[in-house]
Length: 360
Image (cartoon, rainbow, N blue to C red; front, side, top):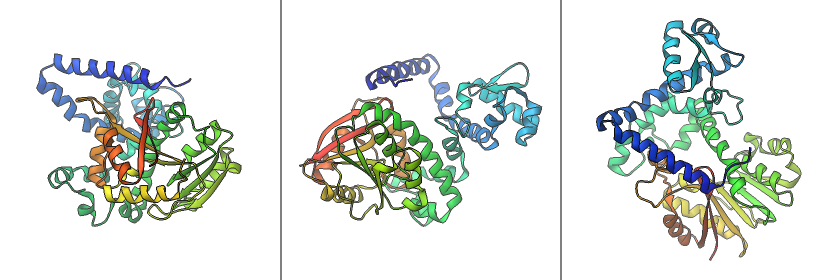
């Protein structure tokens, strides 16, 4: 099914937000606030269902709570209470007393679902993630990320020191990133470029999509962990390996030359300004005069009170790494310091936008 245009999605989001606000206004303010506060407990319920792989157990059809408990290794009565809550939220469906089935929402918890949310559900409920957020108020008080103080190392070093959690984190981020690829491809035309360099691109999901939809384009995937990620094998599996060069490149080192478009997806937002500028200046040094820089980021809307996912992710970045999401104006200022001129911001049907800039 083709994705709707970004303007249609924004209109639908506006209607949904207005309805949500109306519902909250109709209820007493303390009750509406209480519902928001209790959202943390719903995250834990989803985490439990994801960890127990309830969706996989229900893949073949409805089960009683006793049958389901046997399949997932849980206490029947307790599991039934968990399922009762999640069914009330539409995640599962209750078919008669104590019999549960998959719903479309619950099917998204399947690990092999087209846009599986299992990874992010496991991350959001993970004890380490919760411990990180328990120190959030310190970040607000000090203006500095609290995770390095808590762990005695940066967030990136912590992921390497704790590889089991690092894998949970990367799977969660991968689940979110996978929802953005098709919206980006639908909103932005990459076919006008000869060579696209995807910098710090992981194994190259976005670049593979760009090359599939733009047969005349060649690619360069640059990442510090190209061997570990299996990028070359993945690109070959996607049928674009013959049009893509895979090279090792450090985040703060020289950027490969040879491209007329440079893609950085969720890279700049991870870093405080000076480090972000270092990355951007290195890209600027590698680009030809007529090249284009394409930042794939959530752009915070300027409109007051506008609901947007960027505002929540911004707090997460504040907590973990001292990074931030930015408005279009703030991107213009940042890019100017690195020698770029902001050309335009292209919205997509997802929360992510394409921030396009050229060398000044």
